[in-house]
Length: 260
Ligand SMILES: C[S@@+](CC[C@H](N)C(=O)[O-])C[C@H]1O[C@@H](n2cnc3c(N)ncnc32)[C@H](O)[C@@H]1O
Image 1 (cartoon, rainbow, N blue to C red):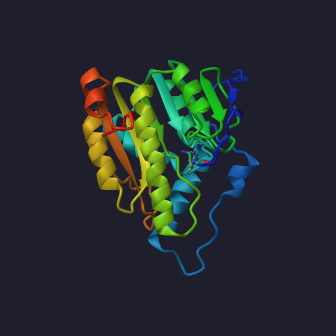
Image 2: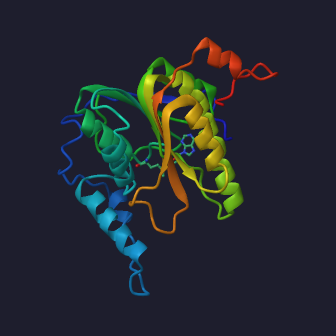
């Protein structure tokens, strides 16, 4: 848990002309161009061909990362966020999911977001609030809560991978536990939570915790995930809310409340 206490940089930079475009602007930064996949010297496994497709499409549509098509698929299938209202994007950099949500909102709602890293977006509209900082930092979560409650929380956040799958999946699960725990105070009743998780053993326990907190919960792997990736998504819709009974029921002997 890397701390970044007191360093939250809330940026709500004004709309510097023209909002977030219509998906066809082809806006690209130098960094986006540098993200093009290298050629497959062995002649093209499916996953690489697929990466080419999604990466090229992202460049054409002005998104800094191909990961946007995972959210697009989730949204098309499960409608996890509304076309107006308050939305929170955790692990937002370089900014594809945020840009996708902003385009869908089209000025009808607000988007808050957080990431350890900076964004790589050409424009920051007025209805976008970004904190560069750690979601594990209580001050950052407090700042996000002040802008809520949210209709939907989405998270593509993932720890940097080390190659040690046990370590990587453990860190991913810890991040999701924290997101689920905090989301109980970030979300409106009826709201939704969508999180990426590395598959490695904890996903069934976390799915059970989602079921405790949401009317409907499922695991879903979008086609846009790379074939060899061990990531999947947990989706909870219809947040049950924090009732007194549920709070007491879940209270542990140390006085803390846990998501299940
Ligand atoms: C796969 S990227 C997100 C891509 C993004 N959804 C997009 O479409 O542009 C995962 C992000 O999670 C962020 N992240 C990981 N742990 C975090 C934490 N504790 N707090 C905030 N961000 C975190 C990383 O910095 C990284 O930028």
